[in-house]
Length: 78
Image (cartoon, rainbow, N blue to C red):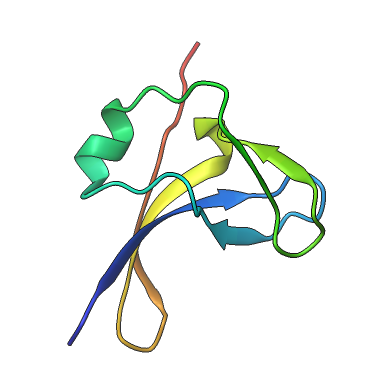
């Protein structure tokens, strides 16, 4: 079974997840320790410019059918 790994962002306007064209990580651990700063890209669904804020990002692993089998998100505890 082939797995795909990617970093996805959730658009604050239309609320849909999309694969980042700018930022990708090798694994979940790298994603968790990364510092994101002033990167933006347009949402492919509504064309809203979306900031790479880790609160609206996730690192996912999907199986060969596209089903998410593992999701890693940053949870901030302030």
